[in-house]
Length: 276
Image 1 (cartoon, rainbow, N blue to C red):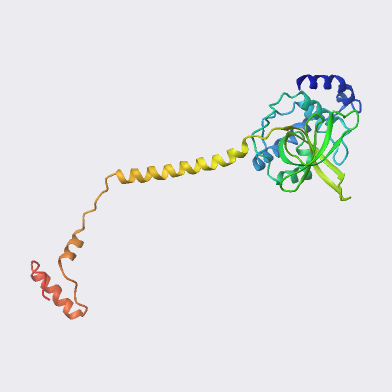
Image 2 (image 1 turned 180 degrees about the horizontal axis):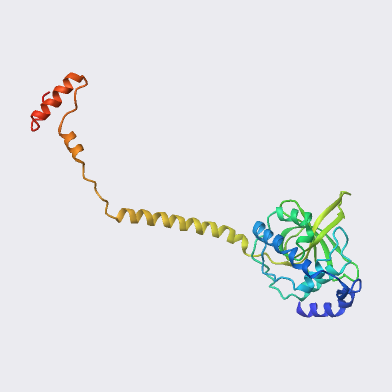
């Protein structure tokens, strides 16, 4: 894999940047960082997409920010992401983080300029594969249908085993919004990602083990509380004087006159409990 990447970069570096040299890309320095810091943090919170990929360096991020939405991939921004993809020495097992929440893909389509280059993980069924012509023949374009039925355009190395109908997991970076005519003849907009196929991560079993572990800890805490409560001595409250005195005398009659006689009798003869 490493030797293939080296040969690819050596053979295609001039092709990548023949359309627009990287040095000729003019980007305001302040525009690079400020447009992506807050949106990227929001995406990380909403969809948990912060993965193991390192952030892009400032030069590449500046180039990626020049991507033109709703156009094809013939631009320097695509070149920069492809080069970074082949240079990156990543773990073939991929990230263990879950794919982002469905709402994130809508945010990428609605405001793509604010999220370019952020790392993403996605899983879905490969609906369509198209080989790209030269000078991009080392890459191919996939349309991947996610579990929520949204479709994402994914650019992957041609050497990756990606067959139509397969379910696959991909790890890469957001590129831009892509417009294309779907099979039903309708012009649609898709989030586009430059990525590589990776083996399924271990987040799925963790999603089951973690809640069960938390439930077990909660049950242990309840058991310990019960045991501690049972072993601690309980304080007995002595009966009050009024309760002791009331328990020694029968209840008063309901008639006021008789009740008054009983009270007087108790006062005069406390040892006998009053007259009945």
